[in-house]
Image 1 (cartoon, rainbow, N blue to C red):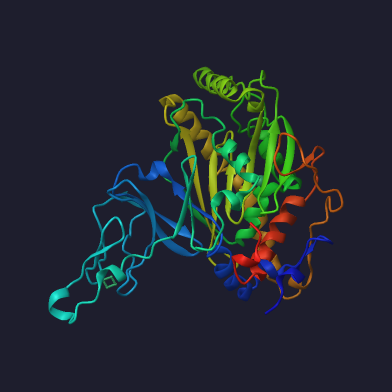
Image 2: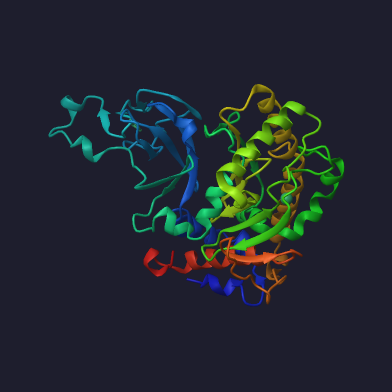
Length: 433
Ligand code: FES
Ligand SMILES: [Fe+2]
């Protein structure tokens, strides 16, 4: 078995194109990355009541996020134990049970097998039903309402998996939460397919600072929330943070007496966000101005933390195809005009029709297509920017910190170093959290 470390030159900044196109490596990824890492599966606001469910994915596999009658959140593999049919064929909803339409087996919200056709008549002796429950994910975690799951019982806790990145993710998920009521989804997730390897997406949001040039036209058009020409809120002083767990964030630091955006085109919206900002400052003091603006949690969850405020999951569908799921958040207490205004902004910015997302997708798609070439794949990519500068530790911002001018590719390099560690390790015992 080829050592993946030989393909990922984090010391010389050369990374083989094979990691984006090779079928055998992709098969190994399914086993060693997606069956082992903590994966984002949904938000608790999607399963508020017992019986609520949301069909999500972990790697290529369909899973059901649900809440049982005791109020406990659970995640099950969406496959019948009899002959494999999906026990839930809908995207989301509410149910009393998961009923398999193939031969009629039924499962409770706690996953227990409750009904088998001709059970008394045909199974002699009857098999023990409690051994044929839905397959349940053994480890779950909840951070600010985001639900994470891990198939590997030997994996570290979610907190240890994130390490120093935990504080940043926690702060990012609460970025605009001025209402004290938490957040909920603004509409159902957007889902679409990109003909690209999933890692291009992860590295992009981990802190590929050099690709801002791609969005030049969107900046000039000015699709953003404020009155000035920009595609999103000004983050203030920009800072890159890198974590050994492969996570990479991009912070903004701004004085707390400076409004995040003036939103002058919509006074009611401006007043609402000013109030949110004041509440954040009251709650957090001077650290309110220090905010992750976007980032990637290894392997495939990325987020934007101010406006737009969204989570993107890049689900793998093969070495050359990724299913993108983007969910958008709004404070539960936000008034209707704020919701409408945010919905329009989110659509302008992100998702399959969003202008910024389209720029990125075009890059990933052509890069993936070109990398599959017989000749092209012999030539490594260049990740050398900032190779010898690295980051420094900071008393306030967690991780290894790099300040402006931001040109370093250290976050993508760290992501691939971690990816290579996962791919080469036989088990979690060979991996440091
Ligand atoms: S596959 Fe579900 S009952 Fe047969
Ligand atoms: Fe981008």
